[in-house]
Image (cartoon, rainbow, N blue to C red; front, side):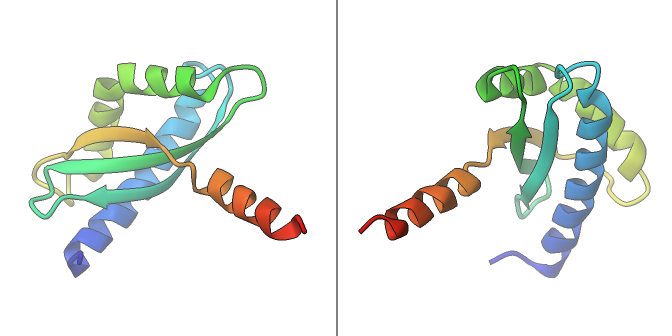
Length: 114
């Protein structure tokens, strides 16, 4: 169970990472729409597991996720500039694809078939 502080930090990171990735998506990620769906922070606030949903008309989602992981240092640096007054240490970022929408769609299709 997460503490109240972890929940607040998660929401702060989700908001700021979402803005950073959307701003960078035009230049770095071939115009893909990147949405940060969930951020989970470790109890000591040193790691942030970030789930992203990627919509890209031309490129593969795994390729864009690899680009996001390659630019992790720059993203963390930009995040540090935004949250420098709220946190002492900026958490290490881990990016993962959020496949919950695909899972929901699969279940809906299974329920529709007789």
